[in-house]
Amino acid sequence: MTATEALLSTDPAAATAAAAGSGKPFVDFNRVWLAYDDELARRGEFAVEDISLQAAAGEFIAIVGPSGCGKSTFMKLATGLRPATRGVVSINGAKVAGPLQQVGMAFQAPTLLPWRTTLDNVMLPLEIVEPYRSTMRKRRGEYVERARALLKTVGLAGYEDKYPWQLSGGMQQRASICRALIHQPRMLLLDEPFGALDAFTREELWCVLRDLWQAQRFNVILVTHDLREAVFLADTVYVMSPRPGRILLRREIDLPRPRPLDITYTEPFAERVHELREKIGHKPGNQHDQH
Ligand SMILES: Nc1ncnc2c1ncn2[C@@H]1O[C@H](COP(=O)(O)OP(=O)(O)OP(=O)(O)O)[C@@H](O)[C@H]1O
Ligand SMILES: [Mg+2]
Image 1: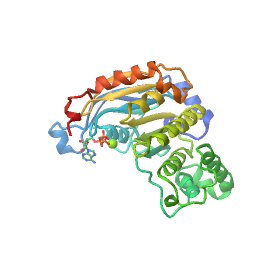
Image 2: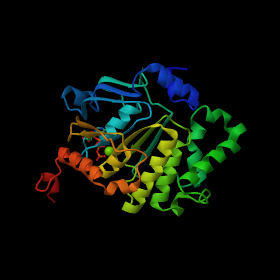
Image 3: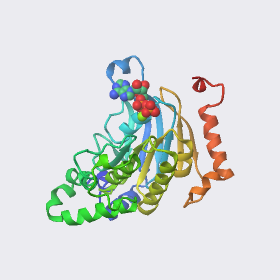
């Protein structure tokens, strides 16, 4: 088992030992540049430029920045879906050389398969990722129980046999998060997962994610446009510049945990949101505000 496999392993003991033994950050971007093809690289047109970032094992980071600045590109680099043009991306000290299987992902639009029930959608990664895939026949009952338990923690008990089109947007997004976590990945990547939801549902799901993370302490990389969301959930927030994306600011969010939703109405919370907003430059009279 390589260090990366150990860390992404479903065996918590192996993962913890690997994390403790390495003494290195879990996520390590070292001067990473990405151009989407050779021609763009030759012309010096990069989607992200000179990204350096380290996250400790179990750290929750959020990435904020304007549309098109390279946030999704960053996610593709973190999971090995795209190789860096320059620089090195490592997960637990091992260079990422191809797509990492045991990473959980959820996106803005829930991508549930319409012909599968909620339960079967959540089970999907177990049919693909080892060691579940090869033990599915023997241990199916156990895996079904795990999926049911996870659905229950996000308030979807009783909806296991419904199809995605029978669920609201928020419920579909809850199921997507379950699907991203069912194989107990060490890293969860969320690309604007709550963007399409109304404010109440969004805040409810912040709490769902907070509680899952608090209990399991996987690494999270959350991409969001919502500064309040970033400050409420993350240990560390990174602000990216407009295209080509660079990291403008790294801000540790020192608000105590566990964080109740009420904290979002406090002065210290507002101050941190304000500071990030200033840095992004989204002020009245700015070009972003002209419609
Ligand atoms: N497959 C691709 N091929 C070529 N260029 C791409 C590709 N995907 C993204 N880009 C370009 O890279 C830049 C960064 O895109 P990316 O999707 O990472 O932005 P983003 O920050 O996620 O934006 P948004 O907030 O709108 O989702 C954009 O200029 C985009 O046009
Ligand atoms: Mg994006």
